[in-house]
Image 1 (spheres, rainbow, N blue to C red):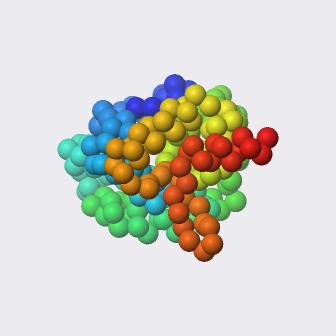
Image 2 (image 1 turned 30 degrees about the vertical axis):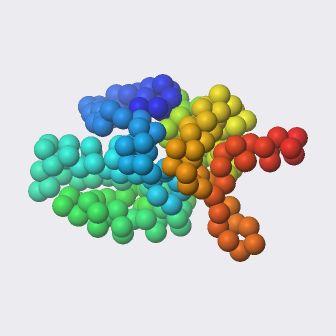
Length: 206
């Protein structure tokens, strides 16, 4: 619900290129609405938005429209060590259906290679990739992104960063808890790192 328009354009153009219908399945809420409903602020370790807005609607649609006997789920994780380690859990979680990971069969195919191939086919990938993001999720406001991700958003999309900074602070004030989207290590301890503090540290270094 908060992705950039160029992401949806890329999806539609890609589907048209391979001649496949594009089915959009949506819960209807934004990530922040999920956080408020669950009274839980999403972060890099626990992202209720991902489960509520991606997994649950997708599973419902598959249960209603995709017979496990003749359906294959293609998951687009790449061949990096981090993504490869995710494959067994994904396969187990969707075990009703046959699950395949075609990009894991291309160990030398980097994200840059995939983007170059998309461009060679006449597709225009989302701008987020040109700006150095690892993905184009959630309008560059993914709670699973780390400090580098959020500093990049502060640089390129300061209005979006400011909106999330304010939302995070309101959530902290209402809950009375020291929670934050980000964390950092200090003196061997992992502690919350509010976006406001991240911004102040960044601005003081300029």
